[in-house]
Image 1 (cartoon, rainbow, N blue to C red):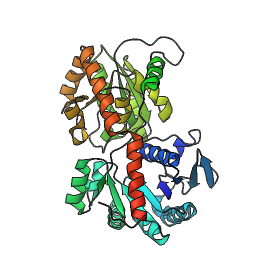
Image 2 (cartoon, rainbow, N blue to C red; image 1 turned 120 degrees about the vertical axis):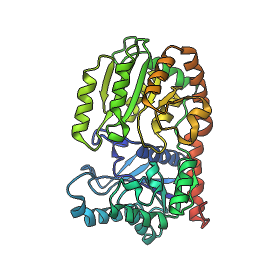
Image 3 (spheres, rainbow, N blue to C red; image 1 turned 30 degrees about the horizontal axis):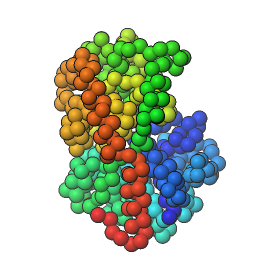
Length: 387
């Protein structure tokens, strides 16, 4: 079986020196791709043009260049970008192509895959992917092409039961549930991670003050400014902010400037996924301030290190509340209270930590979830319909 993942912003996962971008959609495709290679599947990855050779190989994955993302006028580049995507898909020669999260190329990829004799699969990212108009967050031409791609897709994969229901109710399309996956840390790895997190990068002993972590791109819907206000309201703890990029340069600059003026905030900038693991391992709690998500991969990174999650709004399928691995506050004032109470109760934090590790091990092991993808793709090739 030949599988091709399409993600123009995923090149940093293969060559972090050439690109600096990280996101949940890219993370999931990369982890699934690596698992498939381990299972003997022939895998390729179509990425953006960053000046690299047309085709490279990283750890058994063929990485194929397409168009240059975020460059020039999208309308003027539209036709040439689409031809570059089709050329890359033809180079991949895959049996199954996978794209994750809405964009202007969903419909075209479905059309190209069929023309090349392959299957097209779409993995839902953020929840607005489940609405025909993307809740007004994308332009009309893009949503029209997106709807066409969803209709033509040989399978649609949802991250949560909520997404399955939303897609069925709003777009009349069935989907199969495959939860996100992550490599599980076992005893020796967890001990190594714990020892590493007990030291700061210069090798000195880390302070024991509770540290709360925020990771993400600086988009307005992610509301990093609330994390900074949380730091002001809880001076007995420290707060680590990791991320950058986003859609608005001025907003990014405002957040960085504001963070630098708060004594108990450390801003670490953009870090590669591997480098961020140090901060997950040392965190006392992980904080999510976003107003809209699908299933944050940052939750999985936190839980595998036994880090509880504190969020205002985002609790996919009620997992945090049902498994008691953090808190969904519902509003900012309650979030402040939850953070303070967790600081004052190390025993409660330890119990949450144990439950978080057990939950992620039982439900999000990349081995099991990657095998789900393999079975789905094999079924499509064999002519079985998706559920």
